[in-house]
Image 1 (tube, rainbow over the protein chains, first blue to last red):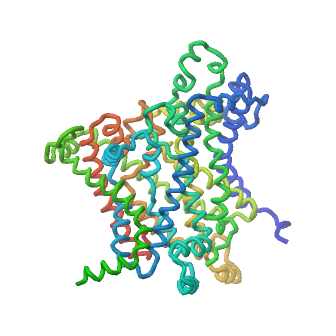
Image 2 (cartoon, chains in turn green, brown):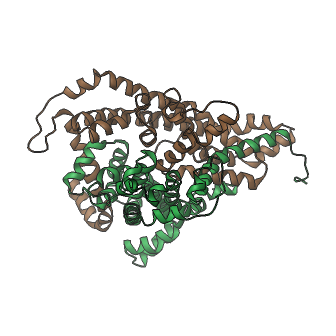
Image 3 (cartoon, rainbow over the protein chains, first blue to last red):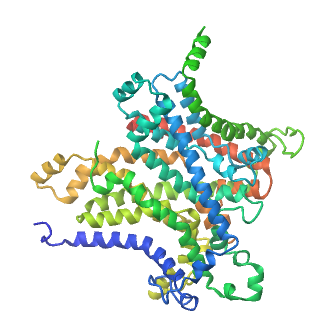
Amino acid sequence: MRSRKRVSVSQLVLVLFLFFVTLTMLVPLLNILAKSLSTPSESVLMGGLSILPRQLDLLNYRIVFSHPILVPSLINSLIITLVGTAVNIVLTTTAAYALTRPRLALKRPIMVFLIIMMLFDPGLVPEYLVVQKLGLMGSKWSVILVTAVNVYYLIIMMRYFEKVPQSIVEAATIDGASHLQMLGHIFYPLSKAGVATITMFYAVVRWNEYFRAGIYLTRKSTDTVLQVVLRQFVVLGDTVSILGQQNVFDYNALARADYSALKGATIIVAIIPILILYPFVLRFYAKDVLSGGIKE
Amino acid sequence: MKGKKLLKEIKAQRVLYLLLLPTLLYFILFRVLPIINMRLAFFQFRARGNWPFVGLKYFEMIFSSPAFAQILANTLIISFMKYVLLFPGFVLFALMLNEVRSFRFRKYVQVVSYLPHFLSWVVIAGIWINALSLAGSVNQIVIFFGGDAVDFMTDRTKIRWILMICEAWRSLGWDSIIFYTAILSISPSLYEAAQIDGASRLQIIKSIILPALITPMITMFILNLGFFLNAGFDQVFNFSNQAVESTIDILDTYIYRIGIEGGQYSLATAVSLIKGLVGVVLVYTTHIFSKKMTGSGVW
């Protein structure tokens, strides 16, 4: 029996090493979580290796969820992620469907065009000027539209649609199905894993987006998204504009909070949607590698 | 005659073209228009009125600037560290994972190590800045072993290594999937044959597993070379600070700084144009190379 076999030294070293690698990923996250859940007087004393909260206290989360900038930015992030992903999926799947129809007249030139679009990056300023000219500055549509289609994901989607059996498509054509019916009743259901995969990928990118939001959504401090506020707070260390000058001046409860624990709470809030999506990513995308077998 | 026939075909397939229209419109608005805007590299920007033509003025500025030479060097060095030095790490990680006997532990390592790939660069920077701070976990360990605390994030001699290690931390799991997949698709009969011959584990790795990894290794390595001018904008943008900026400033952060922050639109566009053209040539060449050698390319 395998389990009773003596564990070899090399196997032990290997497992310990890989366990250490995973610890470098888990400990920082658990540490941030533990600090954010501890009472300020305790969290300031906690080192970077403590992973258990001391004196459970939701103060940091109460501050985050009542904050005049964080709350609207969180709502903006959710809106942009939901609407943006919907735009991504509608455009990507309809284009993938059209481009996988065997007799599409201009298929080749259109594919060449898309590949050139993928390869050549016009750069930041030329794009900025277009967004300005289209009057999208300050509007959520700037961020949503600028990344409406990703050619890589479009090609992935085409691979899935190509696998739909030709016989089913022909049968539906004979029954007089329109293209939209074909897409809705045959292609989506038969490529569920593909649609789910690109939905996850698009949604993760949308939620994590901070750069374009930081350039295009700057009219009011409440226009921006969570990642931008997080960057200002955690990366640039700007505590004053996050806590509010008046609060800092008055040195009230908010100003007395443990900043690093408050930063931690903001990070946790920014990670939660990713953790919700993560099991689906694993289920649809990494399923084969996780189960230890490749099906072809 | 041919045009007429094409028009007729398009008319017959108009629903398909209608489905394609939003996507094509997107690329025309947000990709083609910016490409047309790139002529700005040869003109002086004016918010109102015509842009006066200045010829190669901005390119001369770029190529005679010592700052640009430094930035190009930084870009190539950081790319080299990430795409070449780190490269064996991904293969090694896949090999190690495959050697783990416990299925559950293997799955645990996978689930944990794929996660950082999905975190935003802002979150990653937040975690790393926290861990590498004077009171952070890394210095706690350094002090435990009798060392002195180091302010890692502002240390010019260490910051590039930090970028590389952080890149490993983020993508070791996810980017090794391609190699792990290649190992999993090795036919079991090969292992059985080796076992009958009494081959040791190391011999199996050497004569069965590594040969199966050669093709994906060549593909990945060549493709990496195509992205050499992209040293990782998001990472540098979030890890940079005044103390280390001169050692990790790369093309993309430079374009952002002079263009968006500095308002020198023409100069930034000229840098983008150089980077874009060289980038296309690099990716396209590596794509052709990879297709020729291994049968799979970038797309």
